[in-house]
Image (cartoon, rainbow, N blue to C red; front, side):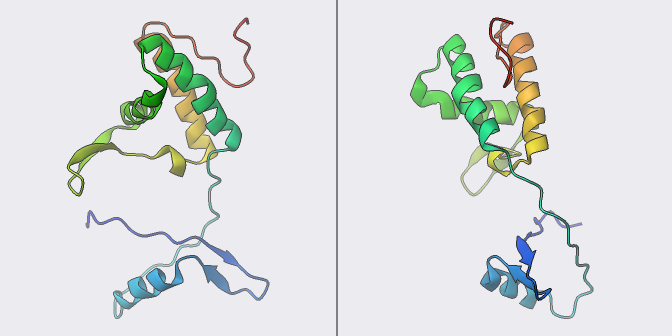
Amino acid sequence: MSSQQIPVWACEVGPDFKLKLEAMVLFQQYVRSLVGQSLQLVLRKRGSKRSLVQNAWIWGVAYPVIAESLGYDHHEHEDLHYALVAKCFGEHFDKRIGAMVPNKRSSKMTTTEFSEYMEWLVRFAATELGGIMVPLPGESEAA
C-alpha cells in the first residue's frame, strides 16, 4: 500500500451531464501517469467546508479567550491555533520544511468536523488549560 496521497479533484456536473473539473491540466497529467492501469472512479458529493460563523467564532471568541488566559499576545494567535489543531488531531514531520505540522488543516474541515473541533476545544480549555471557560456560539457568558 502506497503512502502517497491520492489526489482529489473538485468538479460539478453541467446541464449536459459532462464533468467540469477544476485544475484540468493537473488532472490530465495525473491521468497520463495511469495509462494501462486498472482503476476505480468514485464520485461523491463534496462536503461543505467550515462555515463563516464557525470561523468567526474560533478567531473572534475562542482563541482570544484562551490566548488572554494563557498570556499569548494578539500576534501569537496563529501559533496558538496550529498548536491546538495539532493537539486535537495529532501531527507529523513534514520533511519538505523540516518541521512538525498538524495532521489536519482547519481550512479543509467540513462543518461537522469543525463542530467536533469546537466542542473538543471548549472541553480541552476547561479541563486541561486550567478551567478556561469558552462559550460556544449562542451561549451567553452569563448563563
